[in-house]
Image (cartoon, rainbow, N blue to C red):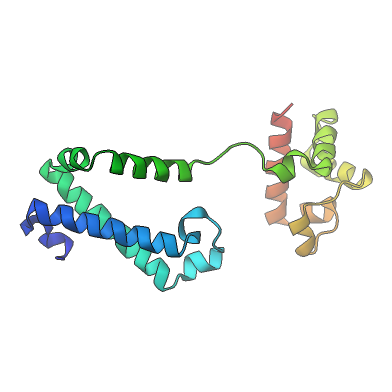
Length: 179
C-alpha cells in the first residue's frame, strides 16, 4: 500500500480493503501477544519493544492513516454502516478493555497497614507529613513493600529523601482528603 501522502490517489474501495487487512493484522498480533494491550508487559518490554511491538505500532499507525483519509473523503460513515455490528462489537470490546477503575486495588482495600496509616492521619489531621512519618514509626506502621527494597525501613528515613518526600506528601494528602 502507498505511503500516507499517496493515499489520496487510492480508490475508496482499495482503502476499505486495506483497512480491513490492517485490522486483521492488528488482531492477529494482539491474539498472539495479548500483553501488548492488556497491560501485563513490563515497562522495559514496552519501551525497548521488539518485533511484536513494531508490528502492533505499524498496524495501528496504518489504520489511523487510512481512517483519517476515509474521514477526509466523507466515506467513514458509509464504511461503518456497511460493516454493521462487526465494527460496533469490536469498538465495544476495545472500549471495555481500556476502562480503568478508580476503586482501590484489592490489596490496598483490605490492607490493615494502610488502614492503620489512614486512621493515624485521620486522628492527626493537622500534623505535617514529616510529623506523621514520626508517628508512623512510633506506631510501627511499615513502609510500602517496594520502599523496603529501595533500602527504606522507616518513614522518617524515607521522608528525608526528596523523591520519597514527594510520594509521602501525596499519600498523606490523599489520606487527609478521605476524611
